[in-house]
Length: 451
Ligand SMILES: Cc1ncc(COP(=O)(O)O)c(C=O)c1O
Image (cartoon, rainbow, N blue to C red; front, side):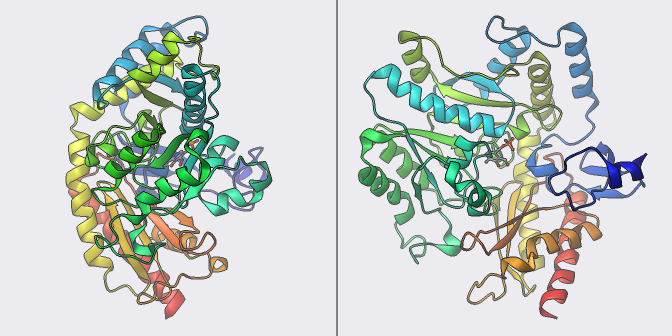
């Protein structure tokens, strides 16, 4: 049966030329394939399985909810699962971020934030022209057309360019490759002030929101802005009446060692988009968390957010999310992410220092990026056609660890990096195993590339 699946399956895979290992079981940080091979899931899928694989408590909560009530449509009903889960999220969210709108994943979350921002201004002022969303290059906000229009990851945009909305993009906060050729702190955060330039050029009357991944994930490998960055962003957004959307689809829900990554900067955005870790891979689940002040405008206005997806607030997904939350809190996994993250980054930085193709090791908590370069001194990237990130990933898998590769971070075409983001339940001995697998994988990759 498995051979048939591999060679003659009905599945339309992401890469129809590739053969995928058949994964049949997961427990903690490990996955097993049908042949009994064990993999250390060093990227929690795509930084999704935050609580780890195979948690029986979550499976039990899902089964109980499914046998009680599997579905009730959100346009006519609410459910205890939805109400309870929204309260749990609101308890964790900073400031007046207290209203939770449920969807099924990350692209739906950023797409919903985009539409909410647009409608918010129309509710406030019927004649409002505000509709554009400013985003950053080297970012990823999802693959639906609105989300991809905001995304600044050239390889994902290129084929769909004619279909995309013309949203402006400003330079990323990418200290290793500063677009202004500056160095922190002498730069005085020139990249943050680029937001003000863009708002003025486009006209503040046209700008509804600015969106940023608090810590950039798949597009550039764990870019962490300096401490002042989001305070400056917040001030600029306030000055020009522009909403600030923090995309925490990947970096939220404990991943960086705080519940929401933006807490590291002590700033409160107007909307937080989250997904991935929210359901921890047990169920498709996403949410936008919205400030009370925005909700009030809808309450006093039409009352209706003209949007919605069939599975938003699905009771099984919400019950799953609640069980994931319970587990995350009871096991102290957010704190563990902070402690293990520091240890992981230190060990990787030390262990990869002498590797000739490792340009940078960066990140926050259990969200670490490793950038690969042809020349460490000039930071010249490998040619994209060499597929170095993919090559490194394959080499790591040979050593039993899975990482999450990406391309295009240097100039939109070239530039290889990969993310390391294991489940937050990882133990010290498992971090050691992960680090050793990555060091060995990159040693093989370097040997193949530079001899
Ligand atoms: C920051 C960010 N936003 C949005 C998305 C899109 O999420 P999804 O794949 O669930 O649609 C992703 C996915 O990787 C992401 O990392």
